[in-house]
Structures are given as C-alpha cells and as structure tokens.
Image 1 (cartoon, rainbow, N blue to C red):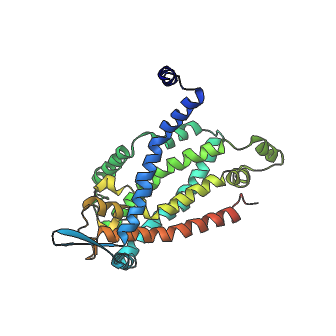
Image 2: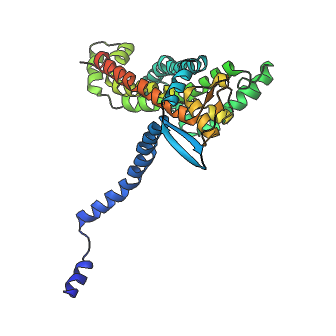
Image 3: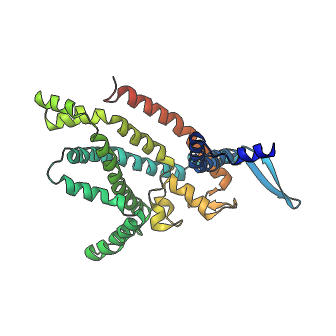
Length: 315
C-alpha cells in the first residue's frame, strides 16, 4: 500500500493539469487586485459614507448616520462644488468638441497614407512614448519661464486659479490628443478596403469617404472614448498633481483632483478646508463619491443607449 502511495505521489502532472496550474497562476494576481482594489475599496467606501466615528472612553464608537451624505449634498450644490463641476465639464467638452473631431481627421489622414503621414504619426505618437511627467515638466518650463521671458508676462501656471486651470486644460487636451489618434488610426486600419474601393468607383469624395464610411465603421471606438470621458468627469485630475502636487489653488481644481487632494493630505479623517471656508471630511468625501456614482451610472448608460440608437453606425 505504501509503495502505491509513493508511486502516485511521483506521478507527473498531465498536460491538462499543467495548463490548469498555469491559468491559475496567471489569473491569481489580477483577480486578487480586483477583489482588493475594486470590490473591497468600493464596498468599504459605501460603508464609510454612512458611518460616524466618535472617541469615547478610550475607544472608538461607530454609528450609522446620514450626516455625511447631507454634508456631501450641501457641498455639491454650493458655489465651490458647482464651480468644480463646471470646470470638469469644460474638460469633457474640450475632449468631445476639439480633441475627438481633430483626432478623427488626423487619423483618417494617417490611415490613408497622405503626404507627411509618417511625420504626423511620429509627432502625434511621441507624447505616448515619453512619460507624462517629463512632458508636464517641459510644459511647466515653457509656460512659466520661456513664454514669460519672451513676452514679459507672468507665469501662466502660477498666475491665478482661472489661468492655471486653462493652462492645465490645454496640456491635458494636447496629451490626450495623441492617445485618440493612436486608437483611431488602429481602428481605421481595420476598415474593409473593398467597401472603400466600391465607394471610390461610385465617385465618392474624400470627405464623404471619411464621413460615411470610416466614421460609422469605427463609431464603436468613438463611443468608448465618449463614455470614458463622461465617466471621467469626477475622476480626471487634469494633470494638476504633476504641476502642484497637493497644493494647487482651489480655483483651478476639478473633482478628480479634489478627491485626490483631500485623501492625500489627510488619511485620518480630520477636517480640511476646501479653499472657500467650507470643510470636508474623508467620510463626507466618500459620500460625495457615492453621489457622483449615482449621477454618472444612469447618465453613462443613457448616453450609450442614445449613441447606439442614433449614431452613424446604427441600423
């Protein structure tokens, strides 16, 4: 009996068993990360939004409360909260109205291998190769040292909140432009050329080819960018951390940066000023994140449904 057990223990794994072990090892880390940094973090954030902690008798006492939600709603509809929301919306509008149409045009130009396409491909891909921190440092030197020296003006990033915001907005839109071109060019390379050739035989112009063939065929990719931009209203920190760390002026702040700023400055739950005389705790910040999720989920699903129903690729 003992010899039989020893022989079974020494039996090598089959090919199928090795594959199973390989798959388990490959997926173990991403699944663990998903459970810890998505499921646990979000679930804990919901719990914290309805908690109140008091220190009595040498120990902490936790109780259910809606005070944090009320505080978050009060901040959201205050002048400070609506101002940050408007700046976040301006970033979304810049991406939709300026970046996306221009990226589509440049991607079409590159995909059709027009004159200078290789140069534009290299120039527009460059921001994706170089670290955003390096580009942010170069941009900071440009607008705070080079341009003021040439035109005898004040440093743009350090002037005031409004100027700082638009300077950061320009950098964010410029950096995201390369990403859009990179993805759109890849999508356009997959367009069926037999359809294009058939349209050319019917006398279609380049603009008609772009508008009625290429855009509808890659519209699912465009939809993805629209939805991620919409979801980023409360997440995109507009690269303010690269320029200022946690010390950017409140007048330049957007929601994505504000969430990071409060959490980075205080991990104990102490009250922090939002720059306008109001105060926000980490527990109220968790409630604010819950409110933003409740706003964005139906909005994102609604926009997705509308784009799928009325977009150029709709049947």
